[in-house]
Picture 1 (tube, rainbow, N blue to C red):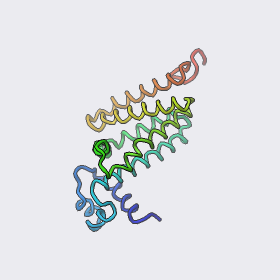
Picture 2 (tube, rainbow, N blue to C red):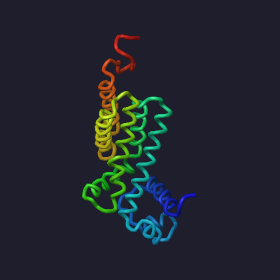
Picture 3 (cartoon, helix red, strand yellow):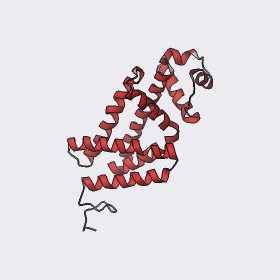
Picture 4 (cartoon, rainbow, N blue to C red):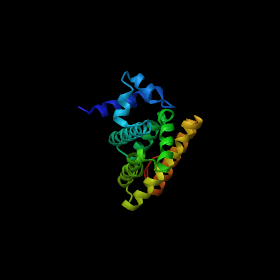
Length: 198
């Protein structure tokens, strides 16, 4: 059984997923959850700290999703593309919060410390593992992980900001092809087999 703080955090994440984040205040959120307005302050201290905890929780769940997709698809590139679609599906809900808190983290706001560490290392480690599985040497896998992470974060602007999901999907598919060609230059991008073979 989780702690009261963790249970409340799960409820907050679910509420934001349904209603969006926007400029929701602590009192409005507490009323929506059917709890005292004092409880979010008691467990998190401030709206900013609560939003940091929400974003970190969402990010960690997303990493678990990526792990599950990797097991289900059996390949890092297929898992990566499936994961992109999963993330893009929720972009309008959580991307604004993600980018808002990214700005706070860049400014060194104290309540973003834990989330900043996670953003700096958590995703890079997960993606580097995918590239090692695809055959990249460890140092190169780390570099490709940073490149893929920057690409994915940048492309999230499309569905979140412009609503142009098809353009973002097309760009991500092309980026995946480029990565695959870079790692396996003798492979056919359509069949994923070495060129000249059936």
